[in-house]
Length: 127
Image (tube, rainbow, N blue to C red; front, side, top):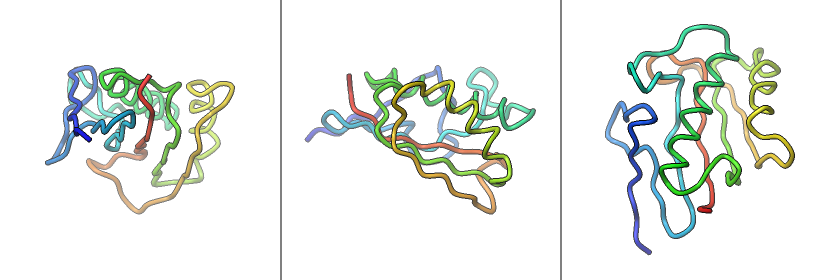
């Protein structure tokens, strides 16, 4: 199968040697998205709710560029530096995945790129 690299200016540029997403057949694998503002490249500040919303907006932009969308996510992985903020993250997450949400894992990690508090990656199908 042909591998297609996905790149969009509507989401933050990669901060290392990786692609925003890779599409193989009808599957889309995203890189982890952190709460960077795609217009400025700067980390958004504020509560975990603000950061979660930015991450999911970034994820949506990458998936749309790949011919998919949040409604086509089959698996999401959430990395947080403080699972004590899980309920707040989950409330925002539920806004983006009403109805039948994808499978999901959430883990606490000691650190994330650029000092982010949250990062998410997804596997989605192409619409």
